[in-house]
Amino acid sequence: MTVNEVDLLCVGAGGGAYPAAFRLAKAGKKVLMVDPKGVMSGNCLYEGCVPSKAVRETAAFYQDAQRFQPFGLAGNLQVDFAAMMQHKDAIQERRYAQHAAELAAEPRIRLTKGLARLIDPHTVKVDTDAGTDTYHAQHILIASGSDVFTPPLPGAEWCLTSHDLYKPSPAMRTFPKKMLIIGGGYIGLETATFFAALGTEVTLLQKGAQILNGMDPTMVNLLLPLLPKGLELRTNVEVQRVEKTGTGRRVVWLQDGEEQNQEVDAVLLAVGRRPVIPEGAEALGIAFDHHGIQVGPSLQTRFPHIYAAGDVNGRVPLFHAAVRQSLVAGHNILAGNVPADYADFDHVPTTVFTLPAAAYIGLTPAKAPPGSLLEAHYAFSEDSRAQILERMDGEIRLFFEPGSLRIRGAWIVGIDAGSLIGQVGTAIAGGMTAYDLARFADQHPMSAEGIGKAARSIM
Ligand SMILES: Cc1cc2nc3c(=O)[nH]c(=O)nc-3n(C[C@H](O)[C@H](O)[C@H](O)COP(=O)(O)OP(=O)(O)OC[C@H]3O[C@@H](n4cnc5c(N)ncnc54)[C@H](O)[C@@H]3O)c2cc1C
Ligand SMILES: NC(=O)c1ccc[n+]([C@@H]2O[C@H](COP(=O)([O-])OP(=O)(O)OC[C@H]3O[C@@H](n4cnc5c(N)ncnc54)[C@H](O)[C@@H]3O)[C@@H](O)[C@H]2O)c1
Image 1: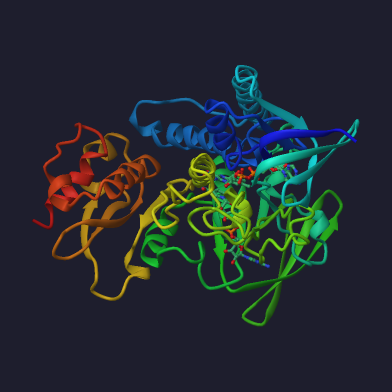
Image 2: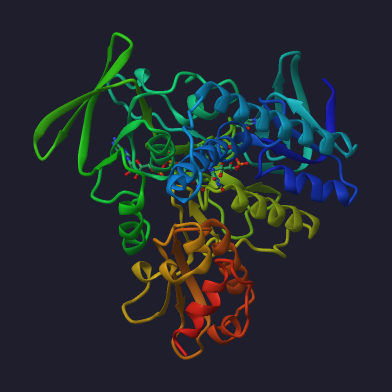
């Protein structure tokens, strides 16, 4: 049996894996990435961030064009869903080609199409179509990500998942007139708003009392009334079953003790994701629970040379968090497995890309002791860009430590929320105060002016 030697073996080739792979390759190390997709970039490009936002932006253009009909844009726009899906597929293809070129330009990294199994703390077997290869790895980075969670719901097989909707050549090619979505988290609510904006009648069923469960309720309550018409949100629902009816689906649920049902063209099941723990991890004693592999800010497992980054550790299941964690793992490997870099799980910019979007970062009042944060507001109704766009709803809220006026967190609902929250993130990372933000005159007429204006409002 041939045993191949590598400095780093990455289980997976997504955002949790490849930044470390390239970092180590740059330092002259030999790296192997293993992924059954045989391409770089994991689920973010395959069925996550990029394809879902490709659909979002088309829906946003459609919504904007309709809103601007009284302001000089006449004509009847039609949704061509098949063409939309082709556009989504083309973006995915373009990015796969870009990633292939990046990989080809780095001879120290090899990507194998296969499934990795951990055998002992330094041995990994890789099952490929051609057989099984054995590797001795100085370091292992587990970045096997997450997968759709399917609950034991009768009729779950009649539902679509985000995988079916967003993967290349998606399962859904016909535009649904009526759609029902089970789950009011990121995927459920985002997808609900994309289809509602395109003209689908959408009903969303959420198990508990709050849509976007766990997020700041003041932010959520500001967002929900701004979502597209044609979207009905129901909370405190217990879904009983899903049935097939001719070409459609019937969903039966209980609400306030009463059985209700609805027949629709398509049902999306979006009740969460679960970590993908590679075979052999449990036998090695690598600790994990239903959130994922347990790691601290150094990303090390109980073995200092085995790391777990990205969705597989469940700490912050977002692409840019996976990228940062991957780099932290890479830096700590290069430091000899003695922690030299740490992931900050508490200050990751997060955007719910609904139409409009809601974004947040750091500490917000819902999670802080009462009275421990000083709030600053800026309403988009005052904002020149928001007025130009006829989108005056929403606001920026910044949260400061009283006394020092150091910025601790923010949330933003409305125009450009996803971009603005990153700017606040940079201010938090730089330890900036309300004074710093207030004296920086950002560009006019851009929504970023609002950050400085909010800061000035408390002076
Ligand atoms: C619909 C949807 C929309 C999303 N939108 C956003 C967004 O807008 N912004 C954002 O930040 N995040 C978004 N996310 C989350 C984002 O996709 C993930 O946080 C990100 O993909 C995590 O990267 P990762 O590398 O940890 O895992 P993944 O991207 O899941 O990659 C893990 C890879 O490991 C492979 N693998 C699994 N087991 C093995 C094994 N044993 N051997 C070898 N390979 C293995 C898998 O095939 C996969 O390719 C979205 C997710 C979904 C589903
Ligand atoms: N914009 C983004 O960054 C983005 C977008 C999409 C996905 N993601 C990532 O993907 C992950 C998974 O997203 P998701 O929306 O599947 O999960 P989620 O955990 O965000 O939300 C799932 C929701 O479903 C509800 N739920 C659970 N069981 C239910 C049931 N039986 N009936 C009705 N509702 C039920 C939960 O209460 C929860 O609100 C997210 O945690 C996030 O990390 C991020």
